Length: 145
Length: 263
Image (cartoon, rainbow over all chains, first blue to last red):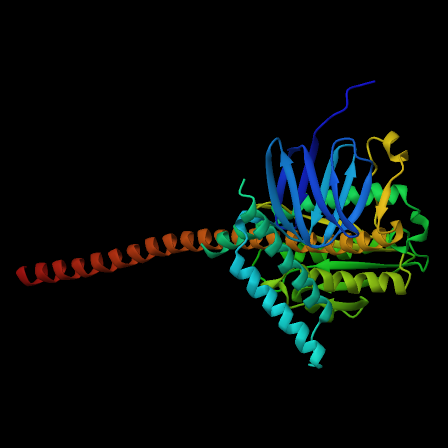
């Protein structure tokens, strides 16, 4: 039997950039129905993503990103992440994420109070994205490299 | 220069969008080939004998042959669809105005006034309209005609099939037999993925066309500047000649006048 490949090739692309393209040892992905980890030799798998924190590890070094809605495909030790947006945790501005969260929360409150013309689905998506960015940020702060 | 700055920006966003669109195609293809594609209308042509052609132009002129070549190409391509009923969909003011004056063409709808500040949301709106009419009228196909961006100096008009989606053949086929896991279900995923794929193809088309427009405009404006400069040079020489001639004439008059007095 041939030797099993231990590493994964990871691609993270968004409409604006090709964020990550490298060999990694492990990836943790926020899937639509729960987070999951990927190591070499994973079974083929396709899922949609929910906004959350994606981490990957190269040797002893782990990296942390916030991702929003999208898809993940895993085929023969290749991981492709298609996300609407993605941001490296170290580049996330806590203040901006906080204010995005407040805006979205306020819009949802208004909608609940019966204010007209609010796209609830969009506000909920914005809130989820803001929370994901905050989580990625705090995870980074706890675990600096 | 303003136009070259705009071109650089448009080119950058296009180049950044291409990998996403390619990866999306990979994922869509691998899923479409495995899944039961017969039951997905977005993957199968309708049978109404009608096609829709989406013509993408800019809102403004002064950009060389950018708009007119798309329009010419679109009209020439109508011959290919003889026997079918062709609806047109105008994107951009130039296409809308062009067909407004020509009533022999059947323009179903248009989408204009977004180029100044366009984003993924415009693409989503447009893709929604196109998908809706494709499904409701059970069209045979929907095509996009637009300028593909090659370089700042080169644009090429192309016609691309948007719907039904044609999955790219996978090079390795022995692995596609493997059982896949899906979360959530295969159907839900495929529907979502196909919808986003169409949206993103429309977005990429917009980016291609926009970058081409900037390139064409820059080239056209540069040519105009060169021509104007040439004309200025010719006119300046003519002016100097006329001025010198008149000075020479005056001198001759003075000299001959003085000669007459002295003589």
